[in-house]
Length: 112
Length: 112
Image 1 (spheres, helix red, strand yellow):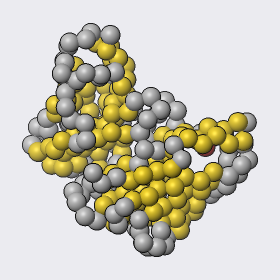
Image 2 (tube, helix red, strand yellow):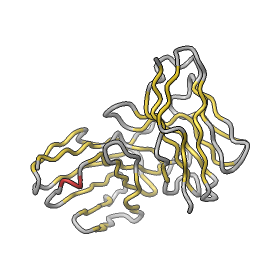
Image 3 (spheres, one colour):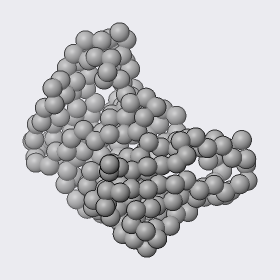
């Protein structure tokens, strides 16, 4: 079926290092959303990107939506221990059922 | 205080028993969802409902059943036909089918 692929599955960094997770779809997306799930918690909405080539920032987090609207990335600059968790992308496919399709998530662990 | 609630937080059942997980929202959202999450894994869609009295199967509906008799409520029954029911179950709601999803705190089900 139609999927949204996310890489890497796991990433371990030293505190202060940067981190990036990538989200790719074989199908054009209407929009893409990013969520964060802290260990033991539930996913929480971070941001939504809608326009081709859009870039949004939230403090140390930078979100990008590709020109073709088939990929997206989340980049964290100078990670802190509070960034630990699993980051999910979720895309609405232009073709097919109107619903969000979640990526598998990237689990970020940080060595203080 | 608006939000989405799930109860109970932890649930233990004996093998062969059906069990119903509760999900209630007071956000006036039309769409509601059930996801299953296994340790260290992503979100897998079980069922979703875009409107009262209607619901659709997700990717892993076998062994589960739902109802949507009220806008606020979307209970999930894990039947004895579900071969490996021990997991973390997350309920979510959104205004529309592909809008931002708000997740409940989840129910950890353990089948002994």
